[in-house]
Image (cartoon, rainbow, N blue to C red):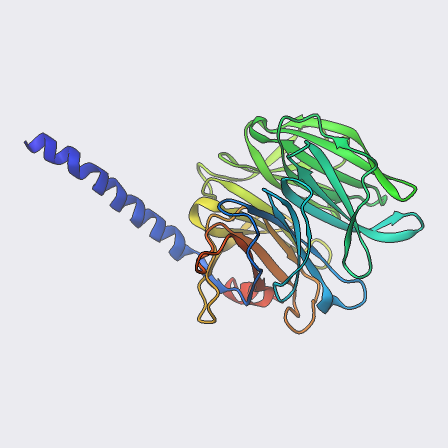
Length: 352
């Protein structure tokens, strides 16, 4: 009887231990609050995933958030969280963009996404009013069983690239984008393997660095140029570092020169790690918690994005965006939360 009693109690014991451990992780993160949340995605359950910020060229307050609904396509939101465009073009998983691409004689922003429906790279141009239109030169097949994570890179020579990985395998490809009249084509210029499943990545354009989150292992730094090979440096670890698996979304806050911050979604602890952009030294963590304005916090975050650009009176110092894996609004699907950058800076004692 005694042995049976011990076996019955042991799950409770481990649950209590995990609760204390999780509480310790949350308490180490500085709390911040979102001021805006987007309308929920149309699809239910695990659907929203990643986001990218388009900065309006003349009126930053009209900037937009482009988010993925990985069961349906892309959604575009204004800075108040209202959906202003929906593109049901396939199961888009991750999205990124770069400004200043010369297409058919005009500079546009190029948006890239992994389309898991037809296993292609989806490419869009953003016009001056923030409307997206498909500019891919035919189907750009990835040759991957399950195109998953994605990020973009623009180098000092003004060349544009897309990185994408293949689901569980950890295999990456790098494509170079090229204008073909009013369309955009892509050619593979590099392939390498991370080692296991990866998704989140971000490129530091000014420093030629590529950051990759290997979900159960940690955060790596690679060279972003096509001749970068497979050489890498560990930035942080799941096993012995500051990350809790899964290591997910990755984004970069640009300051002047080499200043700024590298931010990573530490999904298992429901918070976000912040590192110095120059030497990648760990600074601290923040967590998005519920606010009295009715906006809930975030948990199980996949994709994130950030900009240091002033986006008008709502976000004068930039904005951080996180996917919320468990939107707690009644009967609501997943969505994205927007946090003014100054709230994060204040929480972590960072200069504005």
